[in-house]
Length: 226
Image (cartoon, rainbow, N blue to C red; front, side, top):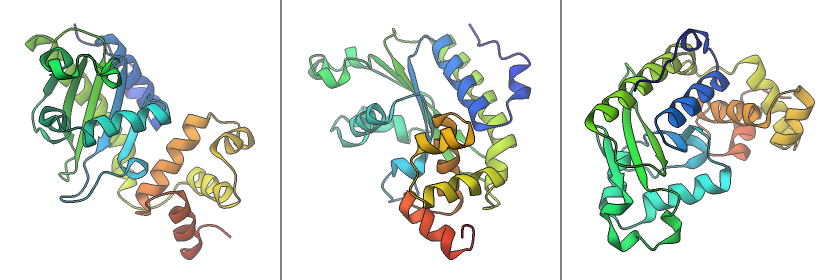
């Protein structure tokens, strides 16, 4: 059945709010994990620091999962990131992977392709231990995630296209330039480590950086930190 978003959808105005909606929607539809990926430019290799937008994977698990998607020889796995229509991958359909421990947590993977009005592509991949979704369930997942992504675009992504850092992002970049870790910055600013990482990810994307070191270099060059 569809995920009841209610008034929480309209109240979602930052990345933490959207993260909570995606996590709740993921669980509602019987999945365990989600990862929202920005589609890399044609011919470019996915960069986790730049192209992972939101996820409830821990960092090590996230990297392992991305390795499964982009380094495994299974062609259907790659379709999760390239298909322009919803695509479902089931481990049970691949007997050669049944005994592979790397896939033990991922019985079912579902990709929901998304895009902004400017044509920028994203993929939301849901995964976990559940049975094959019916056509009705697939449609419900698609609709729910489209509604959340639309709110994400209107409240966050559209503003990010300006390339300007928010006051909080500048503050986080400043502490990063002083060698503080996300955990340390979270304590200093009274925020969660997840929120700090979200600010860093947004700043990396806005300044077209490839990692934190590059981010700090660009920020110094542009006079964003002193």
